[in-house]
Length: 306
Length: 78
Image (cartoon, rainbow over all chains, first blue to last red; front, side, top):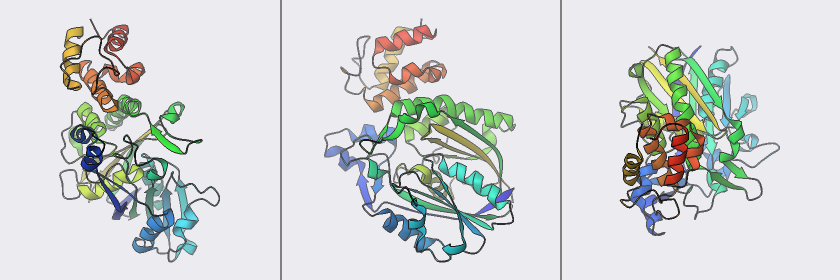
């Protein structure tokens, strides 16, 4: 089936952390850190889920009949009834909207896109809103020098509608659940830990061959790919993937002022790529790659044509 | 296949430390922290034409001697 992207909007946490200042206050070498992560700023919110995410949705989301919502979220602590009713409580017209939730991290947007594409092929939905909302800052302290300069709190809404512009031509998933602890919240401390070099190693060993395989199976060369929408984990991660794929692209890592926003990173990057050489609206093939928590890596190829 | 001396030269560049030698490890090398580890992995990948990407033991390697040993086991070091 096929779809159009009607709109992408997003908001990042209201408190901006300048990585240079953060490092200097701790006598750390900021240039080395920024060179590796690529992040000059991260953004966190001190607001509650309902205030930050719910407030954004109330302002931005204009629901109509035959709309559906997919919420991608992992960090909310509510168990029953979950975070979804609290976030959507004040949305006009929510009473008749079918909602879905995906509990996933950095690969969540790509999975939601696949689900949205399927839903839009039915008669039940005219539009699907993919909402990615994560507040990882609940799970690390300000003095965590590994995570504070990487993760940002953010929410994004990507609205898709029935249309003929984009078609998902292929999809591939790799799960390595035995290593789920490599990015996880410890139940006893409620603190997030990430084994960066292990995740980097796993991604380079798995995601790169995965992308190569998907392209090969579809008889697509890297030169045929118009844009690379790669999870903005860090500059060293995105750069490592591109280097191995032998791709040059100065616009592909574009989150230096945004930070790693987990599931929102791909939609935010897409939005910020419009008008650059990595523009998703160009006719041709586009590779979307989300990886991380799970450990999971999901690759989808979109074909755009007008 | 690379040699020990070639590898040490590349590790000096990766860790921005001209004193790296076969006795270096993440305890006696300031820049061999979590960021330095990523540089080490990227360097090994480049030197081995991506073969080292598949070696899980390298992801947590903590010393030059350990790198030597693991690469030798996988026939990637002379």
